[in-house]
Image (cartoon, rainbow, N blue to C red; front, side, top):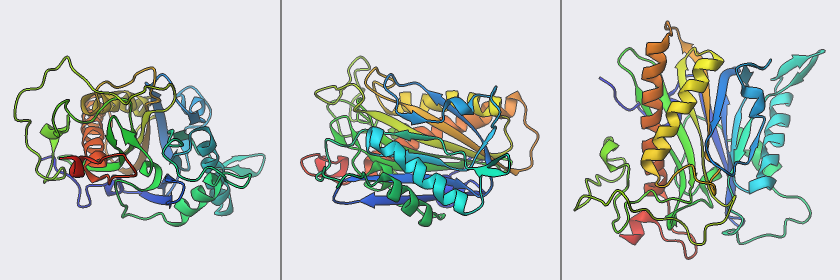
Length: 330
């Protein structure tokens, strides 16, 4: 029987910790996923306006096949600097890829645009994201909050408040799969004209408040978006993780499959206005033989976890300023 893990969080995947740092005044933040040891990684970018760091290094054809952390951040281009703070923190801890005797931590990252919702714009000459990255590392553990926290603090999904969400599944033979997403999408996670999540059908254990189906069948040709639509101002970014030992090529296939979860939970998705990006981490803690059949199972579970994580992000979000949240808009 496939079931959610005990926490229903990405940290149900053995060998992972997650840390959040939130700047309440700025209405932004940083989320860091820290494997206990370097993990095999991959990435798939489907949005038309991504903001990323070191994604090229994750190609299965490149030299580096493992990473030390993955960073999700608010702040758009300024938020990329969060990965520099995480890199410094990891180097001080003795982590990193060794070149000529020098350790260089490998820290890919993706950012979302939340600057329009922030209440503080005068950073005194230095944006706070590098220090927020360090704070997120110091806060890393197995428990984490959802909604308006970390990279999801200033996120907006369509017309409603977005946020940080997570979900997990344990497969029949024991390996774990989990997802962590920050939802700041141009498209909506809610069926137009209703307060029902597109992801309602995959709800596990009342994680969306026991939402149930919409009162009537939706018009599948209709969708809602943020207004106005602005290039680069939206995205769904996240990390999928599994405890099995994937190769970089297998991890990339899982990343590709995991994007189906975005397409089911947010409509429209992968638009020219979004920067939709999903990373995959394989910790290798579960000692299982991996072939194409197993990769297919893990990819399918990953897409389901992404779909549910998006639903949880929007369900757990709280209002911010004049941005309504799902639970308070009902």
